[in-house]
Image (cartoon, rainbow, N blue to C red; front, side, top):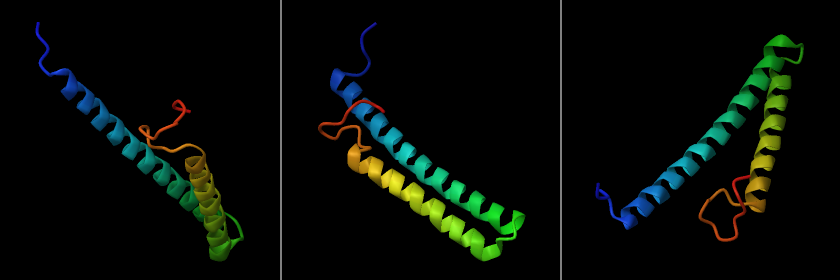
Length: 90
């Protein structure tokens, strides 16, 4: 059976898939950071005597640590799979 798509179209589909996966991975990282921050803050707020202010401090600390970790990783290795000099997946 003959190929339905020419080779160039297959490459374009692969690139579009990589870019979509990259966007999903970035969105997922930010969503996980937000959930970790909110869950930690709510736990301190309602399950400990720390109250609202303790929860707010925990939220800021968890968010800052996660943000630093993501930005530091991005500086070491770009999340863009098509960046020159990028090393493997991990």
